[in-house]
Every structure is written in C-alpha cells, then in structure tokens.
Length: 239
Ligand SMILES: NC(=O)c1ccc[n+]([C@@H]2O[C@H](COP(=O)([O-])OP(=O)(O)OC[C@H]3O[C@@H](n4cnc5c(N)ncnc54)[C@H](OP(=O)(O)O)[C@@H]3O)[C@@H](O)[C@H]2O)c1
Image 1: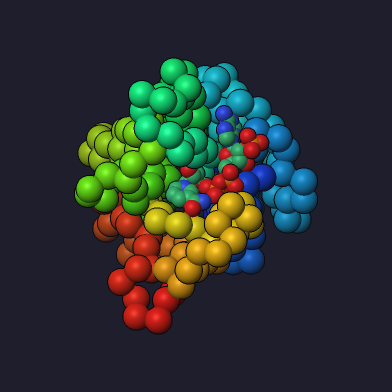
Image 2: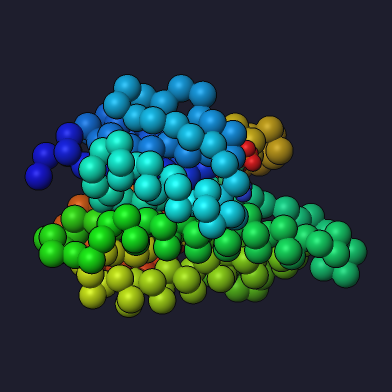
C-alpha cells in the first residue's frame, strides 16, 4: 500500500509534537485528521482539522468517525494531547491538580485509543498496517522520580500502562500499540520556560515525529507493547 492511501488521526495537533507529526506524515503522503482542543490553524492539503475536548467520549468518537467518513480508513492514531503541571511538592500543590492531570493525559489517551481501535476495525490486514501511539513521559519511568511532578508523573505512568494493556488486546487484531516517553522535547514552550537550559539532550520535534512515523510501518509494529524513552542524554555531544 502506498503512503498516499494511508490515513492518520493526530490529537494535540495544535501543539508542538502533534503539529510536527502531522507535517512529517503529510510530507510522506499521508492524509488525515488533525484534531486539537482549539482547531489546528493550518492543516496541510489533504488534511482536515477539528476541535474539541478529547476528555469527552463523544468528541473522540466523533473525531475518529469523521476521519473514517472523510478518508474511508484509519491506519494510525497518535494521541499526543496532554499537558504538564507541576513545580510544587504534592502537599503544597493545588488539590485538583491530580484530577486535571488525569483527565488531560489519561482520559484523552483512553478515549482517543478506544475510538481509534473501533475505527480501525477488527482486522484482516497485514500486521504493521495499523498502529496507535500514546504519549507518556520519561519522567514517569525515571528513578528517582523528579520532585514537584507527582500528579503529572502518576498520570503519565498510567498512560504507559494503558499502552501495554491495549497492545495485548489489539495485537489480536493486528494493531500495534506503543507508548512514547519523551524526555525534554525541543519545543518553543520549553525554550521559553527554560531559556538557560543545556539543550544538548533535548529531542528535536522532527526526530520524535520520525520515530512515530516508523512505528506505523511493519518493522515498527514489532515494537508493540513497548514504552519507548526518547531521550538524548546518553548521546555524547547531544542529539
Ligand atoms: N514537551 C515536552 O518536553 C514533553 C515531554 C514529555 C512528554 N510530553 C508529552 O507530549 C505530548 C505533546 O507535548 P507538546 O510539547 O507538543 O505539548 P503542547 O504543545 O502543549 O501540545 C499539547 C496539545 O494537547 C492539547 N490538549 C490538552 N488538553 C486537551 C484536551 N482535553 N482535549 C484536546 N486537546 C487537548 C493542547 O491544546 P490546548 O493548548 O489548546 O489546550 C495542546 O495543543 C503531551 O502529551 C505531553 O505531555 C511532552
């Protein structure tokens, strides 16, 4: 099957990683749905955009159905919607922080993955044809845990756990499921928030997008069930 026939649904597409993934896939000939909380402002040609709160079941269901109606198939879902909140120790943080982190990170991934799985159907295609990518965080795996991010870390650990379970369930239908766990992505927001940080270990958005594109290939499908850390720290001289 040519890339031109392949269809993706990317959430968080008005954000840094989601936008990079949409552009990487579009450059390779993919079509699809770029969905955001707010509507992604300039989707590539052959892509459609929509907006909605992905913690709401109907919003996710309708988005996946829209992709299916517009393009007739769904091969890849990248559930990149999410958010970070932290900076204070748990007993000093806003009491509702855990609920917010859970909703934005875990519920959005849960609803995106479920809607995508239904839209992808029961199977019958070659293994490696279809994939769902969730986005956790390296800080959810790192030990010792970073201070000041207890709610975020717990939520992202749950996202990683979700991917492991879904990989088993959907593997029977030939759908690969992987969680990416980025360290620090080289985003405009991070540059603004950490202007004096050493960026040598930050992961460029284009590279993260490249990894996601690979996960939607037959070779990438053998990574199903894994939680993959994206982190430049071990690379001498930076990423
Ligand atoms: N940046 C990093 O260094 C880093 C590190 C580890 C993991 N991650 C994860 O990687 C993913 C992408 O990060 P990013 O840097 O691209 O973040 P970003 O630029 O903030 O993009 C995230 C997007 O998710 C959307 N979103 C949030 N809540 C939503 C909801 N309820 N419904 C629909 N959309 C919602 C946001 O829309 P609004 O802004 O309009 O609400 C935003 O456009 C996130 O899951 C993040 O947690 C990022």
